[in-house]
Amino acid sequence: MDDDATDNHLRTTGTHAGTHAGPHAEDQAEGRAGDHAVVLGAGMAGLLAARVLAMRFSRVTVIERDELPQDELPHGEAVFRPGIPQSRHTHVLWARGVELIERMLPGTTAKLLAAGAALVESPRDFLWLSPADWFGPVPGARVLLASRELLDRTVRAEVLRNPRVRIRGGATVAGLVAGADGRTVSGVRLRDGERLAARLVVDATGRTSKAPAWLADIGHPAPAVTRYDSHLGYSSRYFEMPDDPDRSWQGVYVQGRPDLPRGGVLMPLDGNRWLVTLVGNGEHAPPVREEEFLPFARSLRSPALYDAIRDAVPLSAPTAFRNTANEWRHYERLERWPAGFVVLGDAACRFNPVYGHGMTVAALAAEALAKEIRTLGPEQIAAASRRIQRRTTAVVAVPWQIATSEDMRYAVTEGPPPDRATRILQRYMARVMAGANTDPAIAARFFGVLSLTRPPGILMDPVTMVRVLSKPRLPDTPEATAYPPHHGPPAERGARRSA
Image (cartoon, rainbow, N blue to C red; front, top):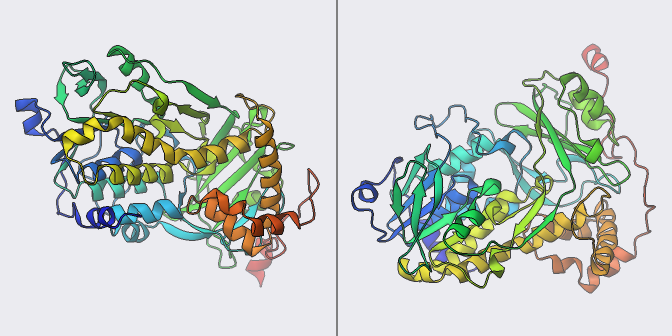
């Protein structure tokens, strides 16, 4: 973090041993706000927000709709839960997210790696076919690969090491409680009728957030919404990772493009597994029937992913996911905003998950929250909610631009049409991508921006622009070889066995 005091506070606060769950006795007995904060949702955005709020509030209660296992063993199997339906599909945590979570929760990365997660270099450790061509062995950015179940369990356990934080699982929020003046939020109302008083309420309930309706119930207008939907569909299944000493890559990524909007990702997971996610837009949405999974993989622009899984042992049936639209609820634009309420993460702005930015943006929002509250007391934090909403929302601007400008390349995308500036940017970024395939200098800048580690302006500085525009222009639909030049196709299994 830029602010040393905030960074040091995040490193040194909340390292007490012991995990806690269940309601605060004080909440039930007294029902007073005091210096109590309530966070709605125990996903990545909610957990990191709770970690930050524990710097300034003596009590932080996380309300989660799912029943959370209270007897998870440190090295036991992490459990899927319905509240994160996309957890059965590919996730990546970009370098910036890894860095921020490690600062907030020191030691988390080591625990994840010990449990089977992998830190890899992208694109160096992948077979990655971009819309232009194969990436060569160029510099890029680190990504952490792990099952979402493992990520959530590990981060949740680290957050709960702080005795100020409690989680109440199996509880559903029905609405906000307005203060006596009608201009503040003073707590939440649960479905069973219980009320929890709080100085601050943070909605981190994700894509299913009911915040617009909750605000309307207490007399506040709903936000304007900007939405882009490229009708991207996922179909994913797990495979046993084959034992192959000749394999020199960690994962495979075959991207689609407008003329063939279908692709696929293969990534290693804890438990010696591969997770394979097939993707496609519109009528190219991937199938869910088992007998159609491999044929779809074979239809991609390269046979690399199909070759990897055709003889692998499947560990699950395919699972579909279709809720992939980009949607920005513009709470930051509302002229009237209740004190004591903030909306974070996917509840405020969600992205097409194919770009892998959701968890990193959650970490960026938590960082922005930490900076805003570092010198404030609970009452001051509640009074500053409107400013906090704007500052935490500002972190979505770059990933929003990346996701929507790319999605607008597809004819099936619904949303405001691209303006002239966006079309110019799209053409330039296509050349950046093509240059990044082989030019180490362009690749380092491109992946710095993609990983949200570096500002997008570095792709527009004169030196980079000259380097990009000096490259030969590629045709609109360039042909690519079946495998990258630096990594040929796999030897036949029979040939390897007989050698």
